[in-house]
Length: 269
Image 1 (cartoon, rainbow, N blue to C red):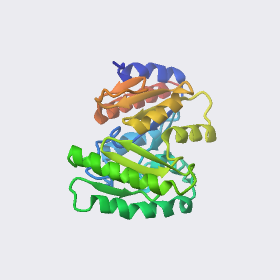
Image 2: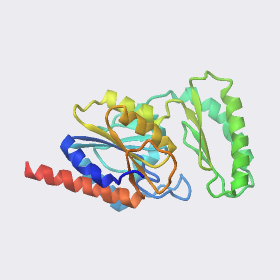
Image 3: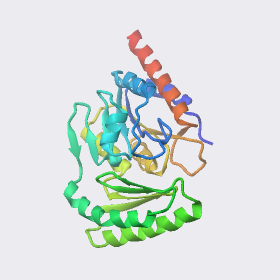
Image 4: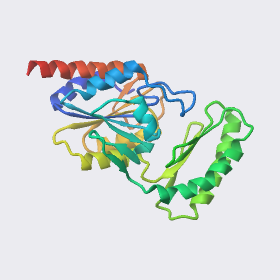
């Protein structure tokens, strides 16, 4: 059993600086019924604003959602926001970064999209999400056997389409009743590495909070730089994480404790 994240707080204070990376859905907030529901939560926005105000913390929200959604969910200055697993970013000073040319990936996605739509046509519990840079097929509310069958067909469609383009362009991601196709650089681990190299902050301890298998890639990236990772949720799946928090609400409580610890330390200085 992983230790609770509360035991990590003193280590973070000793480090003095924290590069805090966090996922959004399933980590800071419960999952919305569909990914296209974008409703910012005032209490969470206020908490992230407090964290972003700390001189000893640099905050990045790194989500699988498209960047335009992340910007609406986290309308907070001085925070680096990254969407589609880090393909598209808005830096702390407002600069836009796109790490893949849109025109190189969109034509293939346009071939796949109508065939995925056809595969779920008339079926209940499925949702096709178009992120611009990627396509995701959600079957969370579909019956188990049906979702398995439909996602298998969708994976065959995607594999056939990307077999006709350079192999370095795309990858297919699976998950619990979930399938996604997007650029190979849509990878949270590579995005964390990119940000740590492009925006170094000497002496800062990298820390990542996340809940699912896409976040495991980021856990590995921060641990390779002597950082730490926290998995959020009650699942007992295998994980690289060092610590655990049982729910998004527990993650918010822990982040508030982190804020209070660093705010108190700053007040003493």
